[in-house]
Length: 417
Image 1 (cartoon, rainbow, N blue to C red):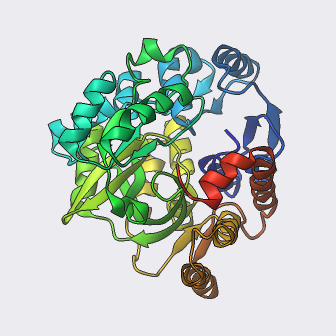
Image 2: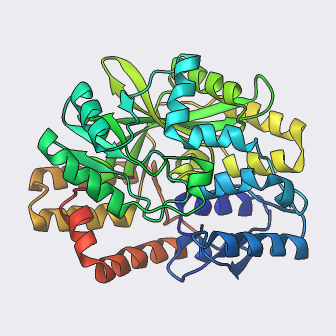
């Protein structure tokens, strides 16, 4: 998955430690392919062609056994867990069981597990059919969000739809089903998972999602974490993070993550996302894998990919030492993280479209300059000494705008789902 931010962050984390990195994927405008920390590039089928991809993965492992394999997307998190017995013969894995992974990737199972261990979640319902969806939405109160129950085997990676009124729901529900397509294997894995869930809309999620991310090992005390706040996403209501700021680790939220992971049997890299509501943090998502802004944690002295590598090699003592070494971090320095080119492009086109005021545009540009001046801004793709991924990421944005102008205008220029 060389287009993913977590993949690039992992390659840099490992490469800087002298660990050879084999990158596999397809396409030219994929940032991780161009990192100087990538030792070798291989072309492989896209994971959307699941059978071909798995055949390739097994064949490569048989030819060159011993590589560490770790998931960088929901699809891979499920696939590696589901086929761990076969893959484990030719790869080194740090892999919990498939039941544990699916409980975290399926939001219905995730929220049920959270309820059992006392982790608060955003009010959500999982209706079957549009009539149940309308009833659930009325109980929750409009506006609501129609969101995917899972991203496993999703063809679109869509975040969902905003529904303001009851008379809009039937059309939005039908549009959701028509647009969101899943691989055929999903019905075997998670029946009814292609149906949208109904979730209460929290406007503070636009610029206030709180994230705890880190590593949890097999041992009782093997936990370390960093926290951040997503302050800008694209599109605003339901989107991918563009800008983040460091935040203190909420001890109660981290304790809840540990209870959740221990209850379902998960270990490894994690990211948990929350929406603040009336002084509480309500969980909305959990990523049991490498994740988009992982470079922010790595830049703050948490080498998550290296810890996964140690775990896969069975270096438990070295892993425990590393966790102990990184656990204490002097918070409050003012670190920030952003997709620099994406931020600049978003500000430009939203000013031209009238979706952003001149004052807000100046505020974001000043935010970026202030953090750059203090050398505390981490760019998602453009790192000193490793510039080519940043150029590839910029080219990919421009290519998307030219190839899909309607989607670009809607998601970027207008900032709507």
